[in-house]
Amino acid sequence: MPGAGPVTRPGERATVRLRDGGPKEPPRYAPEWLELRERADAAARAQDLLDPLRIRWAAGPRRAGGLVVHDLGCGTGSMGRWLAPRLDGAQHWVLHDRDPYLLHFAAVACPRTAADGSPVTVETRRGDVARLTPDALSGASLVTASALLDVLTREEVEALAGACAGAGCPALLTLSVAGRVELTPADPLDAAMTEAFNAHQRRSGLLGPDAVTVTCEAFAQRGATVRVQPSLWRLGPEEPELTEQWLRGWVGAATEQRPELREHAERYLHERLAACAAGELRAVVHHSDLLALPQPMDGAS
Image 1 (tube, rainbow, N blue to C red):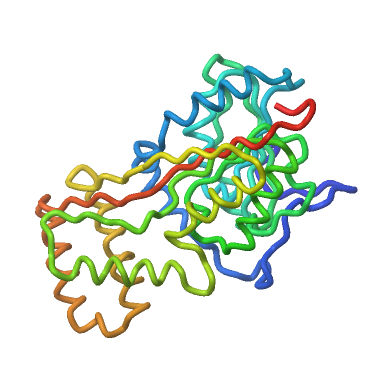
Image 2 (cartoon, rainbow, N blue to C red):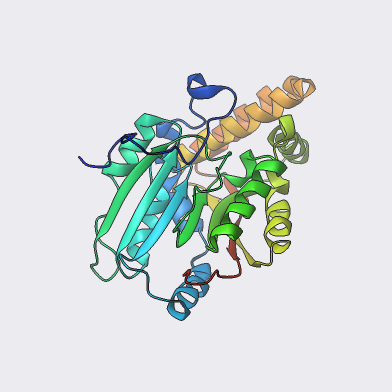
């Protein structure tokens, strides 16, 4: 179907550059994990941030053809499936990812109608969104992303904020890890696991749980108004498979970062998984959603 894949037409320029590792790098997220977490993501996102967006667009000039939304690191397209049906008016979604399979899936599964029945169209662009080129967001009404900020570096966040400010477009950046986990029942090893996981998220210069603070500063320095709302995963008996997979990944990252924890991690994970299987484990995983409203440019929405 049109738009369902990384098609480059004659004369087009790429609007994102791949990282130095190039297209041979493995995908950052497995599609099975993205599918598993989609319902929890949708329940967690801060819907209160949509009203300021609507007010911004209502106060600006009408854009011919409707809203143009750039979804950075779109994965399987869950952000579009959540957001497009919540916005009125015609929309054109530009999906960015470096994985051609995920781009195809996201394009095929993108909603085709907005909240008021207006049409939604889609195109795909392959590349790593961590390196936006200056013209990447030309004509954009909104930049959006999910679970992206914490896997960027400070330099990449600065580039993102600069590109949004240069285009005069808002940014809705959701589900960035906040570095806090609450587990019930509690275990003495919880704090050590949390600290080790957070250190793992900061490896190689990535921002991890510092991402929201750094991003707020980057947008504010460019004159944007920034709002932050909590977006919590509430995991428990209703989401046993997601809870199990999250727990395995969380403990695995922690012990990878701090191998000295492995001596006790096997017992810890075994007991946590048993509690999960019995419907007794609950977890609140803290994330943050961020809305940045840069100073609008002349004629920009």
